[in-house]
Length: 419
Image (cartoon, rainbow, N blue to C red; front, top):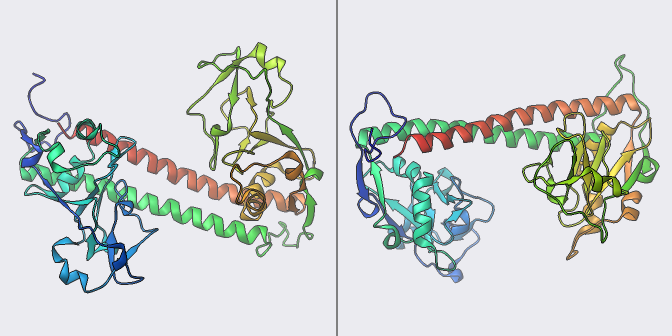
């Protein structure tokens, strides 16, 4: 088959024939918003859709602006309704994705602000929504708007770009199928948020001792003890100094993984960007070598992120550099799994925030870390707490993996179902 024939790799069996190549100006237009005055803003009234409210296939609701109710009639041609497609017109592309979204029920009967646009088309509107998520078209748009700072999008800049379209019936079938995938993504996203919210709430109650576990025989555990962290753990600095090793980009048995603070996030270790040092250089360093069941804490920059070097961590040889410390349990009556859970609780994070809040360059010192206080129940209750919270973590991880797989599935469909 010739490469010039316009047919997708993946297609519903009831359709055949080539897709028609069209210029963007003949597919859709962009209706730009109105430059409402900031002086007209009100505390309640009609919602205003600003550029900051348009995310990547989501409408953001964390900074809502309002205009007087009377503006609905006065500026009726700028009124948005549920399922309208809007996009950001300044810095419209982020991480190779276009900031385009559907108006949901929350923003129904809102007004369209300047530097935002609404898609107008005689084609299937939902199909155009997915067309604007296709990487090939986004790459073309990106090339067309490059050269200005900030990059701005207008129909005049992209009107000559080409895109291939099927007949409207096939457009609607494709859009309907992809919308079902989006519904699944929305459901999983909501489920993940609910689980995280539940975990946050139950951790608050556990570590404030509002919720207490009981022994297997139903008896009550002993009261918790308050301890300084230095009584329980050793705090070990990462390696630093003038002999800071130069990392290399590959690994085998002769190399050691060398982490920086970017490898530790709110969700634990992140190994997408890996650096390694030779075993020879590793042996010359005096600190920062991880042992299984060590906990890593970031102490500069993004302070207060923890990662647990447990049996599931994929690397055998890991060393940390400055900007992090190792928290190594030295008390046999304290579960390291319990420590990791309490370190990720609001109770402990408030202590970290109290020290780092307001600092231009937030950081923690070993001296400060050792002064932190935690509450310790007896070992059997620690185990019950850690196991209970781990069971929630497993559910969250399962849903997160489902969500990631569904998003990846959709990404593949967007590549295969469009020309």
